[in-house]
Every structure is written in C-alpha cells, then in structure tokens.
Length: 92
Image 1 (cartoon, rainbow, N blue to C red):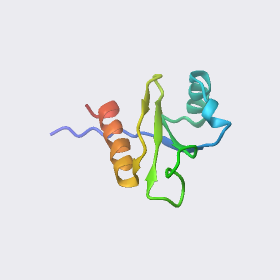
Image 2 (tube, rainbow, N blue to C red):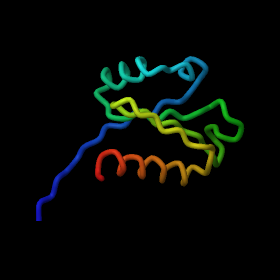
Image 3 (spheres, one colour):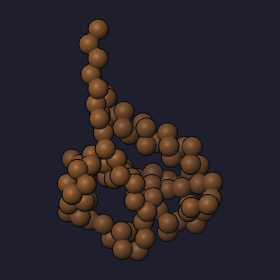
C-alpha cells in the first residue's frame, strides 16, 4: 500500500473592520507571504459569533481563489466545516 502525506498550512485570522474589506488580491498576497494554503477568517461582526460565545461564523479562502462562506453555527460545527473543506480540497 502506498501512503502519501499532504501537508496543508492554514492561518486563522479574526475579522475586524479592516479585514472585512479583504479582497481577492489581498487574500492571495497574505497566503503567499505566509506560505499558506488557506485562510480561515473568523467573523467578529456577527451577533453571537464572537470569542467567548458558543458559536462562530467563518469564511475560508483558498490559494486558488475559491471562497467558502459558512453561516453562524456552533464551534463544533465550524470545526467540522473546516475539516470537510480541507478533505474536499486536498484529499479527494
């Protein structure tokens, strides 16, 4: 059996008013600068989706230009969304 290991670098950012204006060029620039494959942007602009709460809302930006937006949900569900996106992009 052949085993292939894929390493994926993910950076997590929180969305303040400055980052909410993040555009595709800025995303690509930040991914390149950090040598990362994905940015997971945590929203601080959503009610009940902040640090210290049980919910969160994220947007995932991929190096190839794809953007995945998710609704506010439990942090466990957000973690599943992140893992599912990683599997979809890098392991399927």
